Length: 76
Image (cartoon, rainbow, N blue to C red; front, side):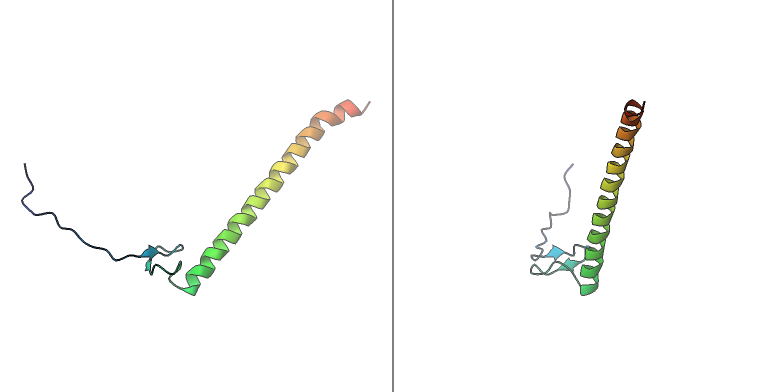
């Protein structure tokens, strides 16, 4: 069965989307407002802080496991 309506072609002007909220912005900008830019920078900072904390926890767990297995061998 064929569709009775003709295919409609919509031309969309060149644009980008805000990195933070997804709103349409001009091609020359990354964010729709300074507030969105600050929010995104804070999000990136929070992610880096979480990554650092997770690495620290992993290092501490590995050290604890190594000491748990090596300490009994070192002590008489």
